[in-house]
Image (tube, rainbow, N blue to C red):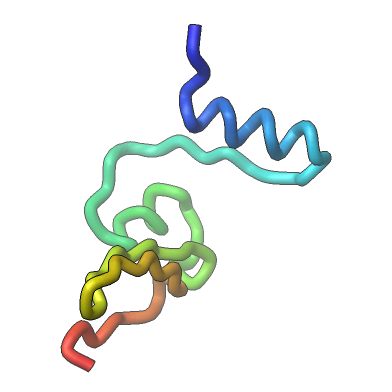
Length: 72
């Protein structure tokens, strides 16, 4: 049976003795909803944004409390 990506990440963290906290919550659609579900301030989280810049896709991770000006 194949491991899920989640399980692979957990195993990698454990194997490398990296401390982490796993938080499970209801499905959310905004950073604000996610922070509320976690019971944390929005500045604690991050948001991943996939953008196409010219001919390449770029994955950006920024503070959940920040807004991205897509036109800039």
